[in-house]
Amino acid sequence: MDRYVEKARKVFRDFISQKSLKMTSEREKILDAVFSTHDHFDVDELLIRLKETKIKVSRATIYRTLDLLVECQIVKKMLFNDSQSRYEHVLGHEHHDHLICTECRKIIEFYSEEIEGLQKAICKKYDFQETDHSLKIYGKCFNCRNE
Amino acid sequence: MDRYVEKARKVFRDFISQKSLKMTSEREKILDAVFSTHDHFDVDELLIRLKETKIKVSRATIYRTLDLLVECQIVKKMLFNDSQSRYEHVLGHEHHDHLICTECRKIIEFYSEEIEGLQKAICKKYDFQETDHSLKIYGKCFNCRNE
DNA sequence: GTCGGTGCAAACTATTTGCAATCGA
DNA sequence: TCGATTGCAAATAGTTTGCACCGAC
Image 1 (cartoon, protein in one colour):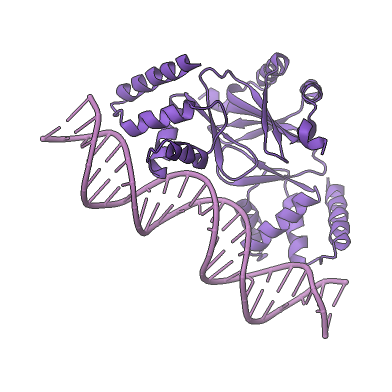
Image 2: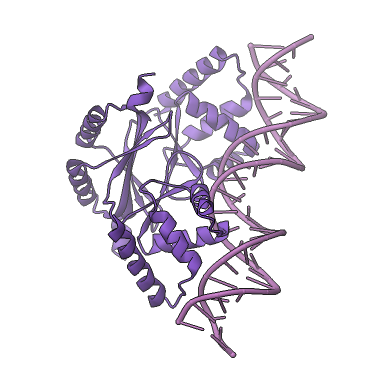
């Protein structure tokens, strides 16, 4: 797993230098925090995670850095049915879709080769050039339906 | 197609009276406007549509009424990858998924029995009780990829 | 007449932006 | 050095809410 942080750091550094931007300690700390768990997170959660390690980064910098991480495809931004954006890191975390429990907010990841294939067929049919997709199934998870 | 507005009106009236709410002219006008096209719309577009017919309804009332229409399942609320909510009416408009062109913002609807079936299988596998799902494919539509 | 509904303006939430001070290449 | 970055606070965008007045049942 740790190798993914390493890989992400490299991708990010290359991206930064290629764009003549600068690698700052804030950006490094945010990248580390993003990789510190495998979970989906929102900006508040990331801030809390950083505060726990006594690292101070402003909210604005987090937004700005996440945009960069999304741009170089280390992080994926996603919207569920609530108002704020959620993110997840991509490296070591291949494409997958989500089951979202509307009771406990738990998110279960799944992947289906067959669904992916059918989606490709749909795109072909409509002469549509896919760049990304998201499949979300909302409902009650195992625990919540048995309560 | 007009029969759907009729059906929607009935569903809405029943819902309203069952909950001891009141049917107001604002609510009727909003319902009509929602059914006046088959398209996806956001709150601003609905306001413009209403203004064109010289009907004045406040933005707040639109939000409040749309919530009711969503609650009685005449309208579906959906989020694409931008910040505001979009809506579509459901009656006469069976379940479908979306191809979204990120260039021209066009939305193409599609439906795949096979994908639906596979989704059901996924839910079974995870013992997940689905209430709703959304599949969105982002990319370039036919017109935009040929420019 | 009694609630519920409406419009308005203010409040709220998530996010973005302008700016002066600061920092990295 | 010099332009990029940061934090702060103010600005925005979309949506929600409190309240006085209005209207449906």
